[in-house]
Length: 102
Image (cartoon, rainbow, N blue to C red; front, top):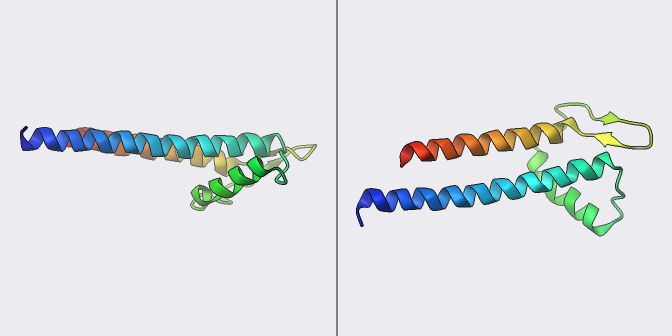
């Protein structure tokens, strides 16, 4: 196997790992958005887990936009929506850059 074929194989493996990680981050952020939108109780273990584990991914975007609080306590966190979009774009850009390296 040539060196360029091995390098291409490593790039492909890295792309798969990147896709998995970005996908998991996106899923956690989408769950957070939905739970906050539906005013889910943080007293629930699963809701608490999602809120706690999604928080580190929101640090770069936290409070960039004001949340919209609707009657009944429903919350639309625009920074969470922005983070979902940003992580998708970042993942896409990295994957495309890796495709150029093949």
